Image (cartoon, rainbow, N blue to C red; front, side, top):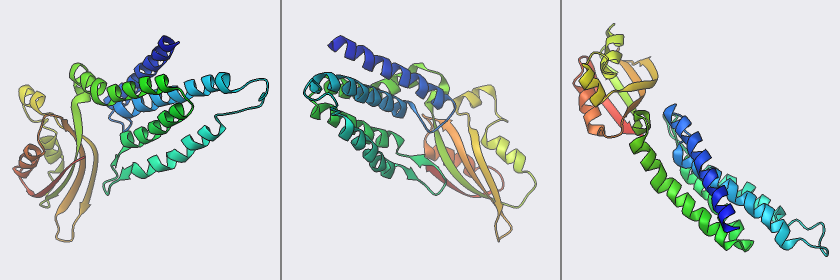
Length: 235
């Protein structure tokens, strides 16, 4: 019986990992940890729902549904998890993994309350592996797109007509192949507006290599011609 549970949780971890890799490669907000946590916790709650009927229902209680209250717990904790998700001023969303773990914790509590101690123990082990081990391992052996992070930039530049050249410089499209591989930048979102002073402000969401320090990006942008000021935020 225990091996069946382990296999189910393992498959949930694997499938959640596949979804997370797909989202991470495409630079979406649903990443490795979040998708794995949701899949494992959902699997746990499903196992508990199936096993609870066999454990608690009987001839004297043919219409008994011990998981009715548990279903309400899962729904209610969703609101608590929503409070963990943050939306910053630059429209960047963070805290999804924390929200998923809050929801997963409710699944663990349901399992323990129903007396499925081994199932809960297996699930929490898989959850910790998913968040702390698997995601880091996949980033090490997976494609380079998994080893990138987002950086928010606010750049004030002098009024000029060479905005395209500036963008190419930021993305390092004018560098050699070796320099590009060392620190390629990919702009994912851009907004340009005029300031009252006559200058322009460029707001960027840029994907940068995970190993590159935020200070390196700051000084790199600061040295570009026509740039007056730079504000960098590691997302």
